[in-house]
Amino acid sequence: MRLGVLTGGGDCPGLNAVIRAVVKTASHQYHDEVIGVRDGFSGLINNKTHPLDLNRVSGIMPRGGTILGSSNRDNPFEYAEYSGGQTARKDVSGVVMENYQKNGLDCLIVIGGDGTLDIAHKFAQQGMNVIGIPKTIDNDLYATDTTFGFDTAVSTVVDALDKIHTTAESHHRVMVVEVMGRDAGWIATAAGIAGGAHIIIIPEIPFDVDKIAQKIYERKGRGKNFTIIVVAEGARPVGGERTVKRIVEGASETVRLGGVGEYIANELERTTKIEARTTVLGHIQRGGTPSAFDRILATRYGAAAVYHVHEGHFDQMVALRTPKIIAVPLEEALHQMKRVSMDGSHVVTARRVGISFGDGIDLA
Image (cartoon, rainbow, N blue to C red):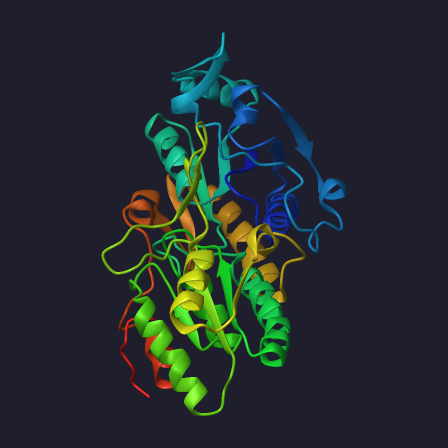
């Protein structure tokens, strides 16, 4: 068979490990040919492709990013064309279908998050053979236990928290660390637990600055003159809205979140008179070499995707249902976002060890 593979949306650690697994499985087990599509769906709009063989993927597993490039702006169903200072949206999905046929592809393996996989599902409905692989550091894709890239992102945040602890304790400060995750608090919750944070603020649990201050006072009463707060970028106060940094026209996610960490630090400093500093980790959470867990998971996903191609399981996504990798319909995977549950194991565990979620509920 002749298989196409593309990476869409934001990059994350482990993408190259998936590409490598696809090529190696296709070559060693099935003697397939693999074609790399450049820069997400842009590569099928502009017919930018090249062969991927064993030599091209040799040594790429430890590398962050993606050797194919990625894009989160080129939705073929709403493709932006610029002329005379104006932007027009048009449907160029027919061009993608033509180039899919021109390249003689039997299936397109799409590695991406909810936006990229939604596009893949639409093409499947037009007759394209598609298999999806779940990718996002946010871990918010439904129907899979874990997405690759999440473990590495959490490890990056934990490493930063370990360093921030020492300076916070030295200067008796409140340190607010803002992390990614958009509308899901998985990174903040997991990294907060692993990194010894005292307060975790996530989108799923609206926060109250007075309740956060109460936790800080409680710590001071026990002789703890510093506090570490991890806040997800999509967090919002009780009765309030998310903090929007800017609007980016043409992107798949036009709303750029950011600034909630600074807001919380300023409010706490105003109300408690304790010095508060903010650190925004930003895109370092997307970069770097993937963890061992993500390398293994990415390899399992890539190998399973090729297997399901040969089983004829199209319009589906490979998913981790521990301990197995299975295939689930893309429609099922996309029908809702996977968010942190207020009564789930992560939140309950955090509360039991005395971590506050800024809502005044304390199980300790």
